[in-house]
Length: 258
Length: 304
Image (cartoon, rainbow over all chains, first blue to last red; front, side, top):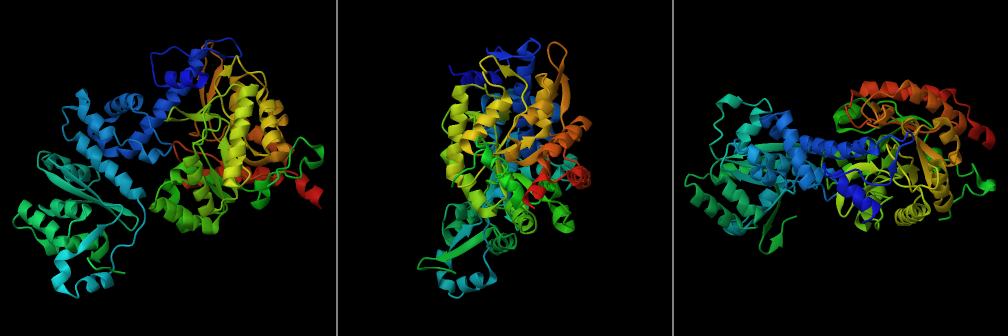
């Protein structure tokens, strides 16, 4: 085993003895000094997770979150030097983390926070312009075949819990006590300009957006939305998606609109 | 690109701080998202901003938007924390490619990395881990710096580390090890004065003698930061390089000592944790500029 391999393995294993070959000028036990590295690694990674998942932290409290994140850091340390990407596996870990079972919506709130960070750093793209929309509407007969491209920042979370209301209550929007966590909500996450937005989609809206993400045509996506919710309002949904800049391209079968 | 070597007395000083010449010998601060709005609104009087490369290896959004606007108005230093130059494994070429793209995009006056390792077996530890100072490590670190400078088509600055342990396997002292690296690779030096102080206390060596033994003509930038105090198993002071506190009086003193040997040098106020209001960092930057102002400019004199 190479020195660095041993050093690395010991960093993430709190029970492993201090690696051999380390010394201190005063002959003191190097384990105490080595512990500084171990602490730096684990604490800085917990801190990175706390930054990505602030509402998850608030929901369970600082102490619980740090303990849970500490377990995660040791079983799933980052595989990328880009810490903004760290925590992809954290929501699934939360779901399997026995002590967090009493907060069943916690994993979905974490999923929502992950979508927010992704949206924040996602590639820039211009939302569709009024001219593009006007062009798409020139020939109404072709409209059903329209394909809508989503903004790179767009994320969709369909949850059996009131994820948006829970998240919003922690932003000072609404009252946490009045939120019924058991009501299903679908979250649309998108960056409008430089601002990441979290929007609760009305019923059927999740099916429409999922259809767009999967590159269905407008008529196919709308049909799914209607079958999910018979009073689905396509016009209102398209207006919402356009208003928040969630759509980045419109294309008809024979052409790509400028 | 030929690198001037500090090994040859005729060139000593001639390549002095390549980065320093291209940006004024002033103080800068680390660019933090907490301060984006205030910086753009007020345009603080600073010599430069520094970013951690890895925070900006994202596709788009507010980080790039803000950095682009700040770059129009200020010199920039890009500081890598994830290349793992000391790793006993090949450098990550995909990461080098991403760094090259970032440097192309923002054309910083300076690029620096650490004498440390931070990845192993695909895991990123988010910490700067220590190296034994022996011939095997020296060869490997030099190879990695050669590869980095070739790949990025520019000279890099190497930062001296803050360490908490030493290795029984070391055969060279740190200053000799760094001097050899600078000699062999032609890289410059980022002198972290706080690291020099922290390691000096932690390993019971004289930080002034350590600094004096470094190839000072190759210093392109200085870092100043704060530390935390702990104790080792024998109760001796063990300083932790936290970047989370104001710069200590002893580090300011050591900075003045370093400037006496270096002449005016671009200096970063480095704060990555417990980020204070912009005004607090500005005050530290102004303090550094006062020290720079007191410093006799040997280089200007030599050039005159």
